[in-house]
Each structure stands twice: as structure tokens, then as C-alpha cells.
Image (tube, rainbow, N blue to C red; front, side, top):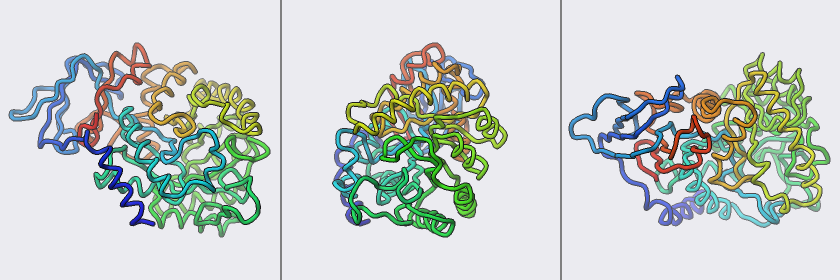
Length: 419
């Protein structure tokens, strides 16, 4: 499998790699403005100096001999981070049949295309919270080698959940697409621990669980708790032994509270938060990754009727829950569920945050400082000396108009100009 995927990625690289440029030893990047995401201050006549993949100077004058990039009337920002993607998939007509129709090669090739769309939209890092057959891990390796163009990927491998649950392949006759702990389907403490170890063995850098039922599956309900709190606690403890955090897909309040008590780092979606769940999240410092833009960008006509009914039921609840979480001061990290919304439209999420009551700078921090904190990566998230040279430029002032984040004109990842 690995040789097949590697060959596919190398072939596809011929399509994607041509726009990337090799970094010079020292590059001075000049822009009309730069957003300091820590202070919220807009710096005029900004200069950022990069050596290889690292920022070595912010402000001042360009070093002698540095190559110069003049960006003009734009705002320079840190590369954006999306904490909830499925970069090898895309929801469309017949998506529920893809588990028995698509191969790992199909997902690998799709990932090449979607990775390019994602980084060109300004997202230089993504946390990929579920893929089939470890294609997200293979994609990460291909990008890291420079074979193809794409964001830095923090992959989960397979999401972990119960037999017949949201993380399983359901709706088919017995014997078709049967899953096991290698593929993330596990029951009881012994099996869920094995499932974690399997994902770690093949390269996962975060563990994703399905604490509750979901929308885009044939579960009878949206919010019912699926993994037990004991199972979730065992997953968190095992992941911690490997230095990994756990992200929990969770819609219903009881499942959310059980996941928070079990020690997960983030709640994904959080559609039915109650006051107790919000208080627990604040007490434990648990992040909410809200995935709100999909409500407008998913074509619900593509959904089978039972799934469409669940989507119509849960979206208003999720909007109300997000507003409550923002008002209460729950920590928020940016996440889109890209695959449910079209890849490359990730920045549409920002305006959902300001509409829910966040200031533009706080919305931007969800995809920079907050996301880096949730990742546990101090090498990205703002423009500062010693940080990775992951930079984005946008037309306009995102503090005055958050939709400026959707107008990306320049992307650099690790000192390499991608767009």
C-alpha cells in the first residue's frame, strides 16, 4: 500500500508542485500592514525577514543582500490553522456509498487536490481528524518530503468509536466493510486502547474519538452518547502515554460532559451544550471547535432523507450553543469540518464567529494563537522571531472587515512561497 500511495503522490506532484519556489537564504517581506495577533495592533509599513524556514526579524530594515518580496497594499498575517478537516474526502452526491466504492488510491489522489486548495486559501496547518486507510498520514509524509504542495498536517488516522456508531461504516449488509480496532471501531476498554495504539503505530499525531452519535451517518439520533466515559478515559490516558491529545466529536450534552470529564483536549461541534457542559469546559480548559460555516455551504439536497432530517434538526441548536459558549468565555479554536464544506472555503468560518459575538481579533486568534495552543505547537500561530515562516497576506483590513481573510493574495509555508 505504501509504495502505491507514494507513487500516486509523486505523479500528482507534477500537477501541484510547479508553483512552489525554493527559499533563498534570507528573504525580506514588505507589506503595507501586518497584524500582531497577540496585541491586536495593526503595524504599518511592516517588514518580516525570513532565513530558510524561520522568521529571524520583525520590523527594522532589511539586511544587506536579502532577497525582497514587495506585497504592496495588503495585510500580512500568520498562516491560518484549521483544527477540523477531512482533507482526503469531500461530501457530495452518493457520499454514503464511498466506503464501498472508493479505494485508498482514490482518497490519496483526492487528498493531493484538496491539500493544494487548502494551502492556497491561507491555511498552512490543518489538524485532520479522520481518514480511511491512513491516507492522511501518507499525505502528510508526501507534503513533508516536498513531493506535493499542501499544509502541515497533524493527522489522526482513523477516528475511534463503537461498533455501529458514528465512526463505523453502517447501512450495508452483514459482512460488507466490517471494521476493527485497526480501523478505529472498538468496544470496551481493551479494544479502545488497542485502537489508539494502532493509530499511533501508523503515524497518528492526534487521536479523534466519536463520543456521541452524529449527523452524516445513519445513527438513529444525533446526540446520544456512544463511547462510555470509562472508554473515553482509557483513550485519553493511552494517548497521553504517547504524548498525544484527544479530540472528541460530540453533539449531545451528556456525551460532551463525559468527554470533558475524561480529559479530552477539545470538543468538536458541541451542538447541544447546556450550562453544566459549558461550566465543565471552562473548569477543565477544554476547547470548543465549532465548525459553523458548513451550515450555509453544505448542499443539503445531496443528503439522504434521514441524514437531511438530522442536519435540519441540529443546525439551529448548534448555532445557539455556539453563541452561549462565546458569551460564557469558553476557549474557541477554529475548525471547519472541511469535506462537509468545500475545501478551500475554510476562511468562511471567520465571519460565523464574529456573527456569534466575537470581535474580529478574537476570531482571528482562534485560527492562530488558540489553534497553536490546542495543537501544543509553540512554533507557529503568530509573526515573531524564531517562529516558522508560515505567512499569509490578504487584501483589506481584517479588523475592519473579517471577510478580508477570504481574499488571500500570498501564502508562504516554511519560507517557501506557495501562492
